[in-house]
Image (cartoon, rainbow, N blue to C red; front, side):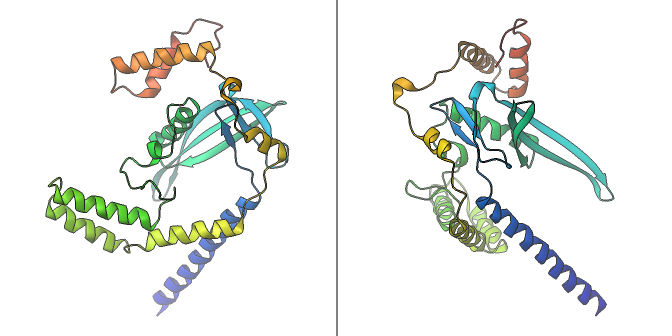
Amino acid sequence: MVAWQLAIGSWIAGTTIGLYVWFQAHALYTKVIPTRFNRQRREVCFTPHDSNEPLFVPWEALSAWVVQSQSATQYGVTRQYGLGMGFEHEGELVSLELQCGGLPLAIAHWEAVRGYMEYELDDLKAIQDPLELQGPDDPFHEGLHTFRNARAAMHRRWREKEVGSVYAFFWYVYHVMTFWTLPNRLVEWEIKRIAKVGRRALPQAMREWSKPLPPEHRATPSHDLLRLSANVRALQQRSPQRDITDIFAEVYRTEPEGSDGR
């Protein structure tokens, strides 16, 4: 009886804390102005939490970093990873930081941003849909359409003998054990709730800055960036399996003293 009371009490406490954190996260949509990336202007717009005035920084003046920390507890060693980006404004660092599940994931987040700003990626499909789970008319978020597309893809692969019956059987076992379409329905419900909560209005300066520019007025990369990018691609072609961070480090080491290096 005592064990049941302890279990129920722990469940109530955990659920209460989880709901509080969840509601607080949703409330941020009405308080925080998101960072925006404008590749036509080659600029990034930050809005500090304590200000309504947006700050615009040239894309090539932005700094990015990946952090790793670890701590020891009675249960073992835990590691945390994050991606940060920002710039110095009037002697203070204005930054955006994201928690990531691992070091490769943090680097991948930055690579997605960099690829978008350099016109190497033009849509979300190239970034988030390697398994082709998004149809041409589907919304960007995961939902019931994601599950249906995954099931249709599995059936197609089974008919074309790409996978066997054992794979198909355990595909259904896995999704039954993970509550079938319940996770997808919860995602759709949360998306609708966020839309109902609404978002903080953008400052007028940011709205004007976000408007598209005619092609003749769009910014172009600097000569230094074009040269460094060409060196990175050449080195990557020679060693396609090499870690991208090692390639960038080697290219920077070969830079002459006093060069911009961005």
